[in-house]
Image 1 (cartoon, rainbow, N blue to C red):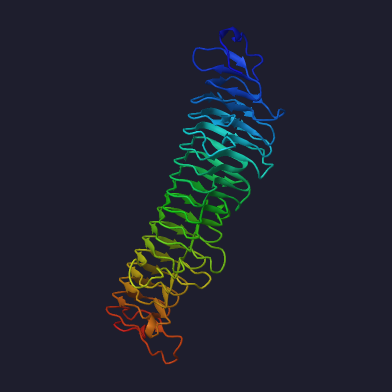
Image 2 (cartoon, rainbow, N blue to C red):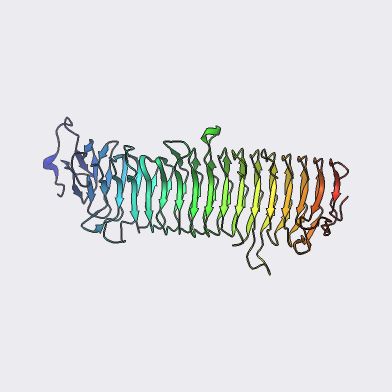
Length: 487
């Protein structure tokens, strides 16, 4: 029904539970549940459609603004509160602002899908909108949007629904300065494949139950920016899986100040993801890994700080496991007070070992890690990698441990006050010698400053070649054992 003019102007607001006022110089009218809006309106009272099936309201024209004016529209159980299409025709330029959409059962707060095609409303804005579910259904959605461009949600909140935003094949969506609380292990922002250039910035993510739910889940996505968010007590902060590419994950805080407010994983990257930039994040009190990066390649970590992560054996702070798919770059990252390894790096190289690119580790710090007896830095068979300017301090076991360090360059690193050896080179038989071990410093460690070991030969027939490595007579078992160029 089309809204009509001044002859419906109200003399009183005594009965305002389901009334809207046209934007601009127009009149007021009672809206009924299921009504189609084809011009802009301002709500002057609550509209409760919980007893009427179908969408509470539908948008039937482009560039409609619905100003909720501080009031609430309540949907029918299992249905949409606002449906942004009519008869298979989507509306572009829709704006919903200043109020609450109440979702009941397995319903959806704002549904941007016509149900028949992948051509849906572009340029949608939700501005200071609160979407409130009733925390009863894992089939509930705050926002559902499919194949559209430029959906934006600003300065609002989503709670009590399983999916905060469920997105498919979206481009250029923006979620900024919202508070999103998942229900029953749900997702703040969920990608059902093929998002491009989505920006998730300055939001606060949490859950209705500790260590459940995920702030952002992506697969087959490209160019997602996840920046400046705070993530508290979820299972996963960012879960990047299945061929995601080019994410920018920067300046977030994962985990609360109290140990109980940590996530299981701050950042979880898996299954052929590549080209991510992970920088300037603060990750604390994770129950498992601060960062898990497995079966992926060409990801770069710069200036992240991870403190007090891990609760059990092998819960490395940074668990980097490319498993030959390709290299990783890690520069100026901190791992401190971790329960297990500070940095665990496993087969970080391209399977084509004849040339670069190789992994690069520079300026990283592992400080006071290894309650379970793990090294500060552990590197297993990262062919051709360069380790330079890294610092291992006061870790419970070895400062640096290299297993099968074939053609690796280890230069200008420092290892001090670690419980066992400063630098430990393991399985350095003839075929797995490092390319260079030079100008490293190992002081005041409990074991050797520098030691090599060939597990396949009891005679230790293949000592590590080196030059300019110093211990200064300060290490508990001696400065040098089976490492040449060491004093």
